[in-house]
Length: 318
Image 1 (cartoon, rainbow, N blue to C red):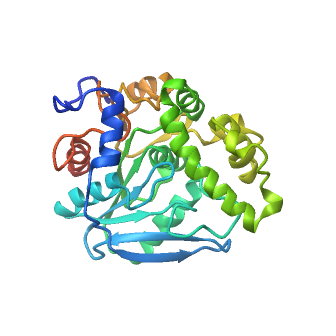
Image 2: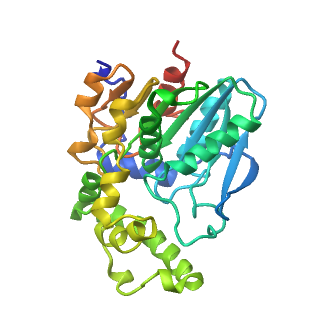
């Protein structure tokens, strides 16, 4: 019953409230790049994935997956890479389709349940890196992706994949969409939609038959955006079908390696169904930690955030 009732996270006295804990790290934290060696992986479907590496010959490798409209350059990715490299891990951070320095080649870009791309990254890492163990770490959308991947593979997961950590994971996408659709979260919703609209407009220039831009500028929710674009581009019936089939929560009971999910109670992005207590209580592998504070991908503390220290400790456990 690995439900962690008492989290060790305590925010600094000056960092109070869900919004400050979410916004301050995103806007004001500065982290020097750690994953400096770049690689482009050409895919069989004609598209590509961009990778960034730190190291390449160590015994331990961590694969980091970023969140919605993020990238390997995000502060939380580079800070986690820094913390792990300091402790002896090599790191591979990757760009979800359409999140690199240039648009991906196909009409469809990434989505919350596209675990096939994570599988491609893992198989590539296994083929080119000598690590005896691989750990997976995901943030927000990347956390949902990581958890869903683990559950889909269950006991058949590659034996070199030993442990995993997910932070601020929207494991029920419909619930998360409803939370972000609330007026109090309009600033986050608009921030996401601004860059997603730009992606769609760029795609329309190359694939006009696949993108109807009518009313794009007036879209204010994921129900509208995912229903018009994400769902049909990726073979889903509508937004609700996409959310249902791409959420990681139904896959959590099948996870078969030690996995830590950390979702702050005050995360403004997450709703009640994003805290899978029942699954953690019934599992011998899923550890659910619910700090009272932390915001969304926050957990600020000092130069090294609590999330980074917590991850390193969990991955190093016997």
